[in-house]
Length: 317
Image (cartoon, rainbow, N blue to C red; front, side, top):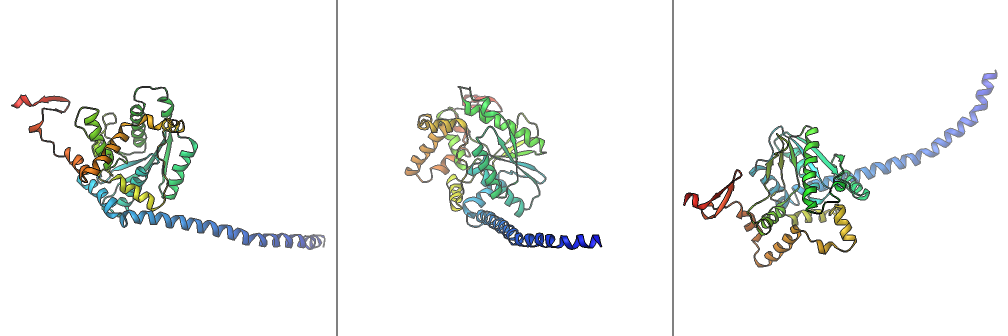
C-alpha cells in the first residue's frame, strides 16, 4: 500500500514533466527543421556552383580545363593527387574542377585537398574553412611557420616563401600517399611568367604545365588550369557572389594597411598592367605571347640551353 501511495503521489509531478517535454518538443522540432532547411539550401547552392562549371561556363572553364588535362597528359589512371588550396579563387575553382572530372571522367584516381596555413591571421583561416564547407571540399589543413621564417629576409622574401611553401606541400602530399600535387596557376600566370623572364631575367622561359620534382623523387607538379583565363575565373566567382582570399600574405596586408602597396608593386602586377595595355592594341596579344614558347625556332636563336648545357649558333654554323 505504501508503494502504491508513493506512485500515486508522484503522478502529478510526472505529468507536469511530461507536459513540459511536450511543450519543448515543437521548439526542438522547429530547430531541427531549421537546421535541415539550412543544410538543404547549402547543398543546393553547392550543386548549382558545380553545375555552372560544366554548363554555364562550359566554354570558358570546363573545355580549357579538360583540354589541358588531355594535351599535357596531366592525370593517369591510379594517380593520387593533392590539390593545394591557398584560399584564393584559382585554387578553389581547381578543387571543384578536379572533383567534377573525377565524378564525370573515365579515369579512376585519388584526390586529397591540402591547405597549408603558413601563419594566416584567424580571419583568413576561418574564410578558407567556411568556403571549403560551402563548396563541399573536404580539406586537410596543416600548419607551418613560413611567414615567421621569412619575416626578417630582405632579399626576395616572396621567392623564399614560395620555395618553402612548395617543399611543405610536397612533403605533406607524400605523407598522404600522393604522387602529384596540383596547383591553381592559370593562363594569365603563364604569359606573365614569359614576359617577366624576358624583361627581368634576360631569358625565354615559361611556367610549365607539369614538372617532375627534383627534391622529392617520384613526385610531380601539375597545373590543370593552364589554359583557363583569369577573367573567366573572376566571372565564375562573381556569378555566384563568392568571396575568396585576395592575398593572405602578412606583409602585403601590412603594406596595404600602411598605404604603401603602390610603392611595392610586384613584377607580376607590372606584367598584368603591361598586358592590359597590349590588349588595347592587339586583341590577340595573349595568345601570341603564349604561342611564342610553343614555336621556338632554334634555327633563328643565337643561343639556347639544353639539359643545363649552353649552346651557341656558331657550333653548327
